Image (tube, rainbow, N blue to C red):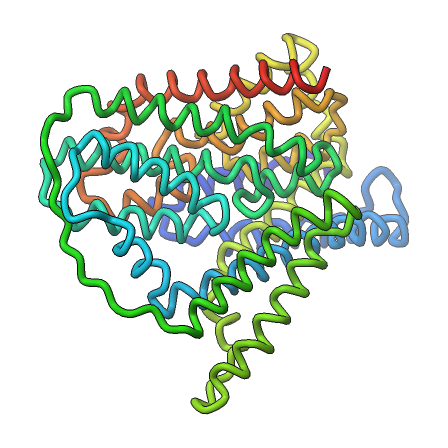
Length: 413
């Protein structure tokens, strides 16, 4: 049975990697294999386990998944509301000047992508940032550089906040790091974005002109955006001071948003609960399937093999390599597998791993959701053209990783 489940897990991984080739959504394939694996565990009990024991193991996995799922659902509903109202894109247009040098814009789009992805999901941050460069009349090579920076900055922005990246949230929920610890990653991750921006802008000398078609921002949207920001900061504050689970605070914030929005739109007869239908459930179902697969792999003892890389080399080097590996293997199952393997590391190494798995996927365009989305929106961006930027990316990733490890080791030890 162990061999069968391992084979199914490998098939699931291959289906995720070749999603664009076989045109089967990864949410469908991982959910199918994840649930099938647990069904087989009941039909042919693992290591002589009873049905009651398997049920207990499944319940533990379901509880972990539900916590992550509900948090993401709440955050994505906020963003879905603001995105559907055009609030986010309109706000970006207002922030842009009429003219700007190409170098300054490189720094601006990198900083904006970094900051925005800290609060919104990577999908929304990428779509909004890419929409800005898609409207520019610039050479293909130049647009490719801007797109490369956006992908790297979006992935970098989420690593220091639990609202910005799924792998960061997963590591936090396992109790490996605290919110105060994660804030130490802001400086290294932003420094890496600046390094990449400066490298990419070396030969840029021109000036850009932006078309500004801004619409008035409605009072209702400003209020909901304020509720979203208050919810984010309250989540961080209450967890740091009172250890209140982030999912509870975020769900409370979502309930406040529903009640306030219902009052604001009472004259239009709109049901604000409908915005839940606009979130990307395929992403949530993908996480569900992946975590079910990783959970069953833990039960059969396969994840213990991951610890071998940590016995073969120093933890800091192993985390650095695993980060780059996440450009090939999806970072969600990779992070889940490492957490389930119960590897003993100090906080500095867990923070370094948080950075590595969050940013390492930027090495290849297929290594992150940001890269895949940008590839579908920017015609100059494909696997080969992005690969031409690998030298710049590896330098930026290395700077960010080793700076994060050095800083956290100095502060925490």
